Image (cartoon, rainbow over the protein chains, first blue to last red):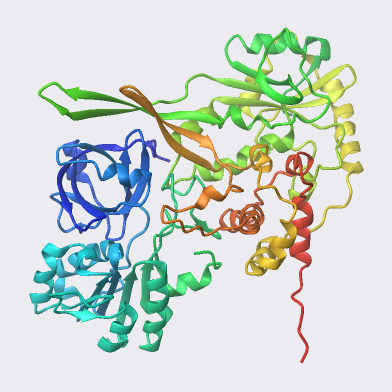
Length: 277
Length: 353
């Protein structure tokens, strides 16, 4: 039993704020306690709670990889009270961080396999962590394919690195938007349809997908058509959370607590859980 | 043999007053129309005729408590910069709770598995739990809402207690059931209890014998999962539910909480409060999506958690202590016993042809 206070956030400083889209910003933060920052360790897929003191906390994935520890990166889509408040913060401001929380992507099991990332909207955030982690350990993995879709180019986060991803020889990047847009040179069409067009092989592959529930639903169907089995599919879930450590009791699906047993689940694990997404 | 003592009923208040010299002492008393656990006050009558309206849950898990205080200060060089300091607020002092029933006190053992788990211990809960002693009153009668014997307990179950007080002629037989319990039984007001042990055993046996046969709930975890997707089942059993949450607030094992921030000027606190899974807001996400959109879904989770998910995670232990408060105080007459039995008995209709 350890005596760490589960609810006391580490104070951190926002080093940089990146305006991703009209409703998504990205924070790059460092813990104020240099020792804590130096010793901070996490796994791709772990999440954290960000505090807007006086308003509350919300859960976000750490979307920078553990192989790049100059800062911890979190992307925040404005949707409720806490996120609206977080959107008012600037570089130099203080923020509370409770991290790492939750489980992580089974990246060890993915070694030697071909990897297919399918991200929709802000769902690209958790995939970014794992993608960059794999690129930083490139020889451990086979062919890596990324399909990233958003409603329009204006809704696409991580714009500043997309060109690099497109240019890389060791990564097949496909971008798609829902409808034609002036100047757009990439795919147009819904993510599951574009995925079927790209038709990545299921053999010795793992697909990792995250995005809005409706996109996940149809992406899972598309993956199934492509021959991906439940255990070859990995996704991350979202729930309303408070404590982040499996105590407060609201994020459970049956006996699985998304905050601590998740947020990463394989397709096979999801089928074992009661149907309450 | 464990330490046993005898306390005359007429000395109860004096004994609690002694204990109150070094501890915060809680005892059940009337407040308005309800019997609740309140700080001991020698001027007020202790009410122990039957179980209190609300269990002593708040003595270890307050209805609301400050977790973290934070202070803002402006940077004199740049007034737009705000410095924030956050500080934990840990509970202090020791407490003794007199008059909880075996069901009430055993309820904390269900908290313990969640709040004092090896991988993540809630130090606020632990501080109070470690520093609170329970002098538990064995039941000499039961009500028709009582069902502790359904969930592997009994009206004289000492689980989680430090002292078990058994009502005997003219007073109480006090049995130490923990080391801490022995240290509570040193008062000069207490006399030898050995000659009353037999009487105490008889009282406990009479009550136990008066209980009806308990149904076998061993299948409840599996059967509740089997009816998970049967929304009609849950609509039917939740039809009367008003979503008021009385069941959750009065439940000795309901441990869910919310965390909210409050600020005043340049100071604020992060506060934990009891939450209520029967409320639509409990799982409502910022996007507007709600995984438990109706009271049928929510009642399913409440019953499922206690009789299926929790046992699944905790060695088959049902997270219900059988106190029956949710039945007794439900304004609409929802009976959790009926729901569990109905789920256990449920057989899907086979459509012929």
